[in-house]
Amino acid sequence: MSSSKKRVYIKTFGCQMNVYDSAQMANLLKPAGYDEVASAEEADLVVLNTCHIREKAAEKVYSDLGRLRQIKEARGKNEAPMQIAVAGCVAQAEGAEIKRRAPVVDFVVGPQSYQRLPQMLAGEEETLATDFAVDEKFERLAQKRAQQGPAAFVTVQEGCDKFCAFCVVPYTRGAEHSRTAEEIIAEVRALVRQGVREVTLLGQNVNAWTSSGPDDGNSWGLGELICHLAQIDGLARIRYTTSHPRDMDDRLIAAHGEIDILMPYLHLPVQSGSDRILKAMNRGHDMDDYKRIIAKIRTARPDIALSGDFIVGFPGETDADFEATMQAVRDIGYASAYSFKYSRRPGTPGAKIKDQVPEEVKIDRLAILQDLLVEQQIDFNASLAGRTLPVLFEKHGRNEGQICGRSPYLQSVFVQGPASLIGSIQNVDITGAGRNALSGNLCQEAVSSA
Ligand code: 5AD
Ligand code: SF4
Picture 1 (cartoon, protein in one colour):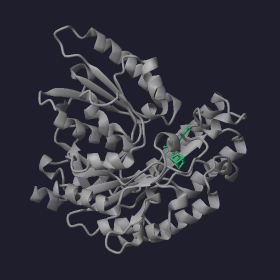
Picture 2 (cartoon, protein in one colour; picture 1 turned 180 degrees about the vertical axis):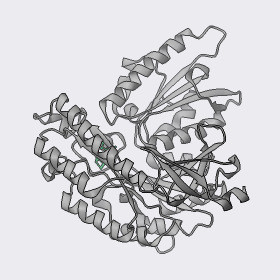
Picture 3 (cartoon, protein in one colour; picture 1 turned 180 degrees about the horizontal axis):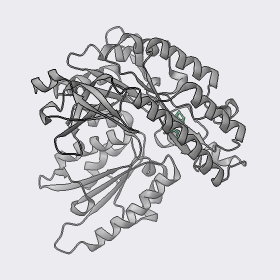
Picture 4 (cartoon, rainbow, N blue to C red; picture 1 turned 45 degrees about the horizontal axis):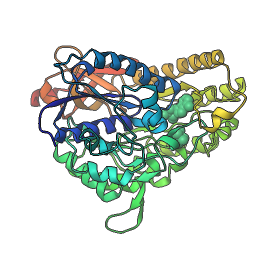
């Protein structure tokens, strides 16, 4: 492979799985001579790692490709030419169609086949790969990882077999696939040796993860995996996302009460508060099931911060269904949440339903729901003022002399403090709380050890 220096710019859209995949692509391209840069203008290779979940996200890719075409065409004869790769879920969903619609694109690689990018660049493989080669992917990626910073993502599971009626994921990411426990434990150990203090286990359906245990051969779920990871010396925090209510088993719930390094934060999307809509969405659970799970988790870990995803305007959603969602949010109480207008995705069952909700109704409902969710988020953050929280410092803050980290509940926390504390966990007296972040002062012992 060529050893001359080249530059790659990777732009990431969408979820944390894509953030992880982008980091893996950067690692993968290093041996081919590519250093990462921060803009397309300086790059020899531009990778758009795309998201297909809602129409807006998918369309954004084409507007970016238009802009990249101008940069590519403006390159002078003496400048290095630009190559463009489209990766991620739009690549998977649209495949060859992308090159037809945007001939400026050189390579198309799906989320389970981007490990072939170096060979494609070297002209050794086809310029389009969208097969589901998950095992091959993790094999080729193994050992290539170079971690920066004290908090790392580790993909443990990919894909989804649930087929919610609105969602493209089962089509773009394929069937549920779990990495083996051995592989994951080895990756986390290696990360901890590189200075990582916190891992977030990732999966589209992370709590559907299952594997046989390395020693006993018994079937493990995510609860067992977390118990084993918690024994790794030097690992201080574990998180996982995103979970499905149907896979929230008692072992995992119990882990929240038993394992103190499992952080008190749970992202558990419910999507709608109406049983009728949950059924139409093919969620496989009703509100009673969801509320029972939440009650159990709160018994195991009373201070857990809950987060969720909501969709308004799924086909057939009436005012009464929407009110049921509002009531569910009032009853449960969320520390943070993501909410979206339903987006009709070609190929999903929801797109075929006749009774689509008008755009204006979706806009109104989303605004009303978001007002409530923001109010709850502000209240939750404010409830932490006056408390002392351990914060894992990850980077410099926006202002001079400021450092920034995460609380156990996943909020960003800003303090004035020395950069030498980045990478460590320090107690912070929380003095300020806004909508998206907390601020405070380092406790005295942190200041003296700095
Ligand atoms: N329209 C709107 N939101 C969607 N999501 C998934 N598919 C759609 C869609 N077609 C949301 C769900 C999911 C989150 C990742 O994105 O809330 O949990
Ligand atoms: Fe999509 Fe539903 Fe699978 Fe989540 S559980 S990825 S929303 S199909």
